[in-house]
Length: 329
Image (cartoon, rainbow, N blue to C red; front, side, top):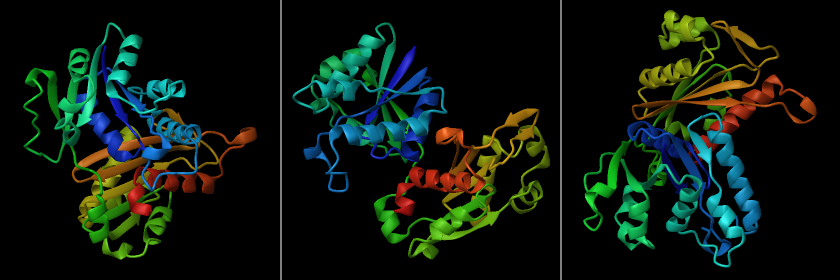
C-alpha cells in the first residue's frame, strides 16, 4: 500500500485540511492517509489555544474533532502514534522522525509518503535526522495557489513530489479587509445558515445573498439543476449538494458558497431505491473554483432518542461553523 502521513496540530481541523488531503490522495494515488495530530505541550501553545486544559483534555478534544470530520471517508484514518508516545515521554515535543519510525513499525512492507506544506519544505534540511527521513519516506509537497518557488536545493529532487492543491481558505487578512464574497443555497436548514452568517457585524460587506430551495421545483427553477440529475442521484446526495453550491456561487458571483441538503425527519426518505435515514446530511462547498461535499450522519442521542428536526438543522449549521471557523468567529 501507499500510505500518506498527514501531521499537524489540527487545532481545529477544518475544510482546508480535508481538501488538501483529498487532493494529495488523488494526485499521488495513495491507498489511504493517516491524520496524525502532533503533541504540543502547554508552554508551546498559542495565546488563542486553551491554556487551562491539561494535555490529556486538549488532545481528547482534538481527537474527537478529527474523528468526526474524517469518519465518513474510507480513505482517511486517525493515527495517535505521536500522542501515545508522548504519554510516557519526559520530553513531549514531537519530531517527524519519531512519527515515521513508529508508523513504519506498523506498516513495515508499505510505502510511506510524508505530506508537507511548501513553506515547511524550504526548511526540511534542518529537521532532525533528515537523512533517515528521506530514506524511510517520500515527501509530498503541497503547493497552494501555484507558487513557483517551491524549491530546496539541499533536498534531492527524487525524494519529493509537488502536489498542486486549490487555495480554499479565508486568510486573516481577507477576513479583516472583507476581501472575499460568499453566498448560500439552503434546503435542509431553510435560512438558518444565512441567519447565522449575518449575525456577524459587517457581514453585508462579504455576504452577497442566498436562496432557500426547499423543494425540487425550486432547485430546478432557482439554481438551474437538471431534473435528470435529481432523478439519477436524488436531492439528498453529494452530487446535488455540490451542484447547489456551484450554482448559487455563479448566481451571486461569489468566491465561496455553502449549501445544505438532508433528512430532518421524522421519517426516512426513499430516493433512487435507497433508504436515506433521518440525520443524513450533505454540506456542499464551492471555494474558488473547487467543489466539495461533506457527508454527515447525526447519530441517535443518549437513551436512543432521535434528533428532532430543529436539532438536526441546528447541528448542521454548527458543523459548517466548524468547517469554516474564521467565518463565524
